[in-house]
Image (cartoon, rainbow, N blue to C red; front, side, top):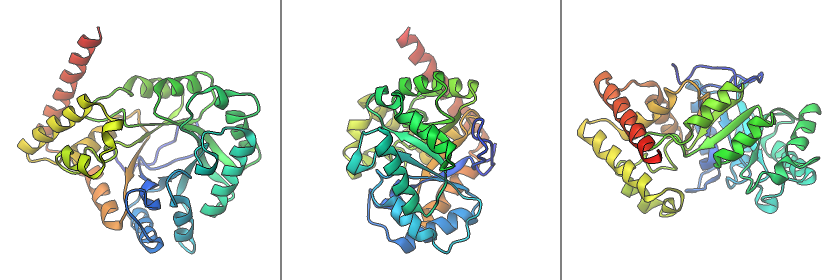
Length: 314
């Protein structure tokens, strides 16, 4: 397993690196960022061997900043994934007109006539996404027109992903925040996707920063809204993992990144970065091994947690 390995995404003709840049911070969702900073991050990302990034109209000025930063840059192998259906001015609209408008806007901002992967983003229900002439039908038409290479779905609801996979409508899925050391709720979905030839992208492996700042309570002070995204049980599990890692002098963020990358059914893991330094740190953690004894103990602890969860569910 290598974080910089390039592998085929499902049955598509796309070969992203397993580690990719999740570009939410490129739009200043957490703090402001300048185009030169974005350019420096992209250049360092590319120099380190990462060949894929994911963005969205929902991520502030991410697409605009990326497009301006990429002007004049030589990034011939870079794959770009973006989303439709979540543009702030036409959010939660999955009609043919609005999806085409959104893709046109993304292409303009990113400076690309053809995008590699386009994901339906965060639908509240699957009805408008599956509706005849809209949703996936529109993306298929745009693919036939040469505007995009592959079609996907990016949403947290695991059942929505299953519906799309079982209907044969997606080349890839982006599931997020439900597979990490804290819990592996998305594991059955990930296996189901792979069994059906659908590529799997994992977003928010560090749970929007909950596992990325040492004691998870620090992350909660920085982003109080994380309590809306994660249950008290998730937060308690995160704190227990942090204490466990501290006793063994290993970084929780590092251990978690290695854990998600160890799942061979996951094709791409997104890592957030807002600077060249953060990109270097993320790549180093993704490519540096955990001491074998700690690694074995961590996997045993995960297995015990899964067993206990199964007993409770039973």
